[in-house]
Length: 245
Image 1 (cartoon, rainbow, N blue to C red):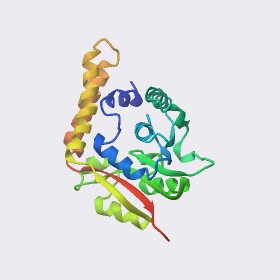
Image 2: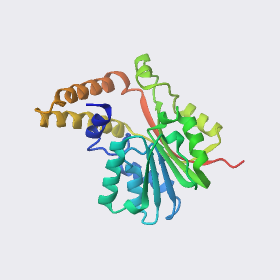
Image 3: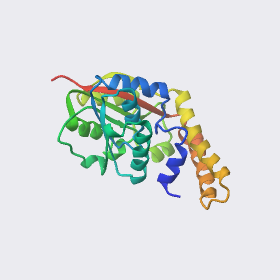
Image 4: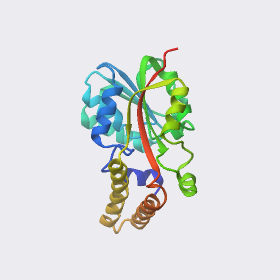
């Protein structure tokens, strides 16, 4: 069982692959989609759940998603057909950092996948290249809510605290027009959903050759969360506009 298969099963009950509940996602999209005929681009869309929700809520919005995963894009395509929005969604299988388009976009999304560009600020630089005048970026990334342990930094990477993260963003020429810091309930619900769902699948499929690995992975990931980063990890989602001048 590879990482992608594990993620697919684990996210069955939490299709938004970040610690955000449905109400938070809806509010972020409301602030991100500035008008009903907006053109959206998700750089690192995965199964395109953000785009699917935006398309379902706004019947004239059009969207494009970029991802390297064949399986994720197949899921996205199938879900788009099921929701009746397939005619307004274009999916591109390629590296997000190499994507080009003949037009610009009113909203660029990148939530939880800034690693595709090498970090938060490079992601914003990439988004700016696709952004229409007056457009917005909806970005979500980690920060350290409290001083992390060396083990947490080794596991998850180098991040700043909330204030430092915002200072870096504004210094790079962006202005937040909406923000959401994931609550403890959202953070915990996300982790419980992932590893509980994966464990549930393993226990429901004892004859599957991947069952033992799935159950072991669920236990390992749950332990890492509880013992290594639960008390320090935070997640910030922002709607940004370019600062004038």
